[in-house]
Image (cartoon, one colour):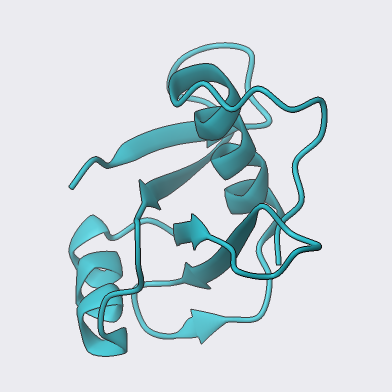
Length: 97
């Protein structure tokens, strides 16, 4: 599976807030998501899948090495970067659920 390590809030390499970004087509088991986050050993590993919600483009979840968290701003920003710059998302705006 592809994994992108993105430094959010940075204008040069090896600065900012790093996050692992993993796009998925469907959710993996929660224990596997947690194990991958532990292996990445970054403050956050973020996953997203295409949303079935008509008001969102993607469903998103955030994991620290120890637990799933309710929100992470820099990992969300890193996900948007991956979608727009690496995966060719072409809409003018992006909606996460």
